[in-house]
Amino acid sequence: MTSSSIEGRSAATAIIVRDMPDGPPHILMMERAGTMAFAAGALVFPGGAVDDADRELARALGGSADVEETAARLAAIRETLEESGLGIGFAASAGPVQLAEMRRALAGGATLSAILQTHRLELALDHLTPFSRWHPADAEMAARIYDTRFYLARAPEGQVATADTTENVRLFWMSAGDTIALCDAGGGRIIFPTRRNLERLALFGSFAEMAAHAASFPVEKVSPWLEERDGVRHLCIPDHLGYPVTSEPMEQVQRG
Image (cartoon, rainbow, N blue to C red; front, side, top):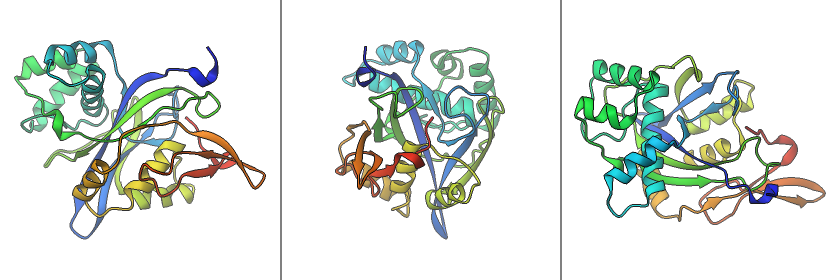
C-alpha cells in the first residue's frame, strides 16, 4: 500500500459549544498529555477512535443510518464523557453523580451499551450535528492517519467539564478566535485540522449560526494536498467547504 492510499482508522470528535451572553461562543478545548502517541501536547477537541463496541451498538440500534456514521456519533459521545465528564447525546440530562459513575465505568473498561442499560438512558444522536470530516491521504500530511468525523454539540446545561489527567492534562472554555490567538502567542499548539476548523468556527456568534452553516455545506472528506505556490510548498484543502483559510505554508504546519 502506498502512502496515498492509506485508509485511516475511523475516529470521531465533538466540538462542544457554549453560547455566551456578551461575546462569541466558547468551545471546549483540552491539552493532550505529552505522553500520547497522537497530537502530544496539542490543544484538541474531545474525541478518539471508533471501536468495535461502538459498531456493535450501532448495528443493534438499527434504523436506516449508515453503521459507521452511527458508530462515529457513539464514539464522540463515549470519548467526550470519558475525557471531560460531559454527557452529550443523551435524551435526558444526567446529574453529576450519575455522570461520575458512568465516567468511572468507561475508564474501567465498560462499554457504552452496558452503561446505557445500567443507567436506563436513551440516546439522542440527532443532538450531534455533522460539521466536517478529515482524512489525510498521505503520511507526509499527518503523523498518524485517521478518518475523523467532527460533530457540533451544545454544552449540556449545568454540567462541569474536568480533565481526566490521563489523556488530557487540562481543559478550558475559550472562543475559537481567542484559542487561535493564544496559540499564535505561544500559549498552545494546534495541528492543521484543528486550526482550520477553529478559523471556520470563529466566523459565527452562536451555536445556532454554526449549525446552520454546517447544514449548508456538504460533509465531504477533507484530504489535504501539497502544492507549490510562488516557490513555497503549501498544504491545501478544498475551497468549497466553508473554510475561510484553505492553505498554509508547509514549514508552518503543525502535525499530529
